Length: 244
Image 1 (tube, rainbow, N blue to C red):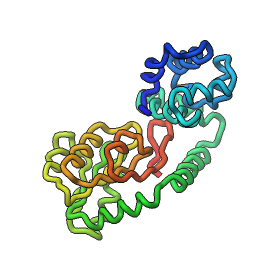
Image 2 (cartoon, one colour):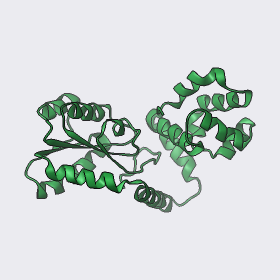
Image 3 (cartoon, rainbow, N blue to C red):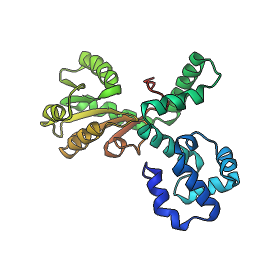
Image 4 (cartoon, one colour):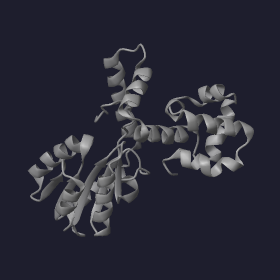
C-alpha cells in the first residue's frame, strides 16, 4: 500500500458510496486532523457510522482502520511544515504534563518496537555484519546521531567501519561508489524520510551489498529497498522527533 493516501482516494473516488465520499472529502481537506482521530470520532465528524469508516479503510486495501490511520499519520509527518507540526503536537499534549506525556510516548514506542521486531531479521542482520568485509552506516539529518552512535561502537569491534553522515548527496555517493557484494550497509531513515538515504541504499543493493534498514516500517521507502528490516516505532509529531 502506497504511503500517499490522497492519491489512493483520488484513484478510487468513482467507486465510493455517498458516505464514503464524505469520509474521503474530509480526509482530503483536513488530513492533519483526521490522522489522529479514532474511527468513531472520524465517523461522527463526517456523519457516518464507525463501521462505515472501518469498511472504508478495508475497501481502500488496508487491513483495517489502524493501518489506514498509520498511512495518514505517515503522510502528515512528511507533509506538515514545522509550524503545523508544533500545532499538532500542542493539540495532542493539551493539558497534560509535558514531561510525562513525552516519556510515556517514548515508553509506548519501545513497547511497540519490542513486539514488532522480527528476531529472525535481527539475527540475519547481525550475521551479515559479522561476515562483512566493510560496514557502511548511512544516516543524515535528524538520524545522524544514531549513525554516529552505532559507528562509534562498531569501530571497537571491526576494523573497516565507515560512517556516512553529514555529507551532501554527491559526497555520500563518492563514499559508497566502491561497495560490492562483500559489504554491508546499515541505513537509518524515519519520517520525514531522507531521499538521499533511500537512493544510497538502492545503489548499494544494486551493487550487490547487503542492506540493513532501520526504519519505522517494512513499507517505508528504505524498508522496501532493504534486505533486512529492523523496525523501530517512531511517530511522534513535533518539531524535534524522539530518537528513543
